[in-house]
Image (cartoon, rainbow, N blue to C red):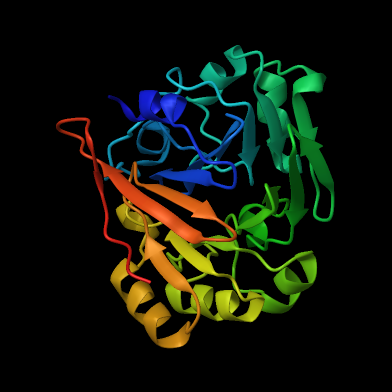
Length: 279
């Protein structure tokens, strides 16, 4: 069973959500009501063809295999707003795009109807399919001055997607409206992003329960130290669980019960195996 088929068929308990890591800063979330949301999926080889950044992690999903209800994009960079994947998602008439202001040109180019798009600036929010999405502070410098993060409210759970941002604890904390259950953050420390140590400091400040590091491993040029991040988190975060997910890894989460399960897709057999949860 492919990862796309698995996501489509996945059945969840009433209070659960499923989170899958797609590589780089890309994630997929599914709710018990079968709403599927993608965040910053990079699924092509565009960055190698355009910039020479070779993909070190094979894509686990082709964009025509999954028809998300919502797609969130934090900024216009090609490893977040993938120019080669976007046309496939646009063809799915049910997909609504929620983006930072600098993504407007790409949506115009693909002729995305106005009713299927929503541009959020920092502090703006929208509610779609029972999911409340709020754009929060991000500082990606001159590389992407309109970049945002997202605070996503699903079934009483709060997920904070930092997007690409440097370490700005005061501004980020002020921008969040609620303590997040899960914080998903870059840890590569290059191109204006937080490193692992800074991510741990921010997670401690906002009291996130689960910290997921990303934006490392895809390109050599982007740097990052996943092992150092996990070790630092073990020392600094007393009441939070920190992890780096494998491509295709699934995390089941409930606000009341915490992490309910983890599993990883075997790329050779297309079967899944469960992981031991260490809490």
